[in-house]
Length: 391
Image (cartoon, rainbow, N blue to C red; front, side, top):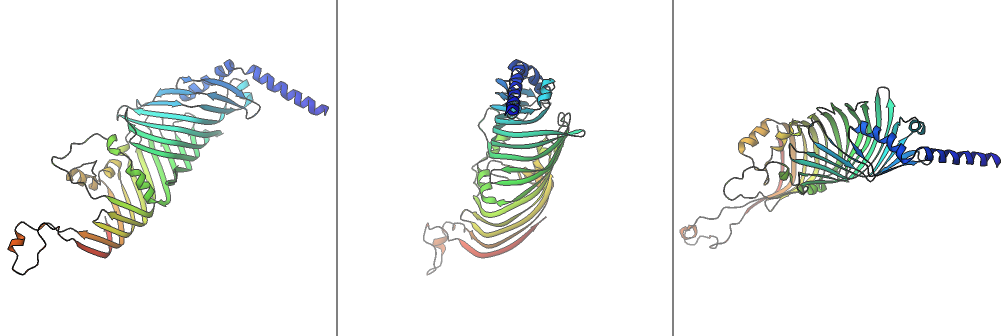
């Protein structure tokens, strides 16, 4: 009992001594310059305190900073709480070694004035741990963002992704100029789950990306429903509309089915539309309807292709993305695409044109003609089965 009391007394004295030595002012003097050197930015802190003996870390509330990136983009970060894990001896030596960090209630905003675009991460929660590995650092990262918002500067979000997560391993050199992503998991709610690996070179100057993505098979319908809410036209310069009334295309609805793919993305991060995108994927057992014109009971497809992002965007025009036939042709020439599509159980309708004026009067006596003003009867086909090969 005496020995236990002595140990407990020494422990209490040690805790009190550490707290007396590592005051708020001393922690600010030790920790803040280290963070500022790491981030290369001026840091603002609401409060700071020692978390000892439970956890042996430094608790920071209301940490925030802003900085300008090499491409003139503005990066702003703010958080409700950050806990930095470090060894006690490194703090006492005034040379803290950050082994781990937990972020709660984080917010990140990236503003690019050149393309008038803003990306925001809201509700960021992350756990990071770091350990030295020869000439590099190995980082374990687990992060979830409540929402990712993409918009034109000062405008409402045109694109929103909920519950985007990352869980994996990253290696970096000491200057954070070369980042290697080990086999890691990337997710978008319950809609998409993928494995990602690759590297980002020249992070501080001209970031060059080379990433491979392998997506598991997931239901396609919910993804398409979410994509329908995206207002991508608000992120691109407006194109002049063609003169005269525009006939909207028949709506195409896809339900059921599963979709999976492998992709490779390479190029400069500053020029996303010039990035090379190569992929192969498949679609299984999807149902397709196009208004009252056609329906397909079962659609299966396999495809692969390669091309730059700008060409992929121009392959298919839409009501909010008018393009000329020449632009469509240039896009198709810039993409290498192969696909096999099989459909079964399809039905289609061919709407007849209205009968010309006077046709009823010119009909022979006793002949049968549609009643005046009656709509023409459509031609219907069913039990369609087809295979299309595209190159």
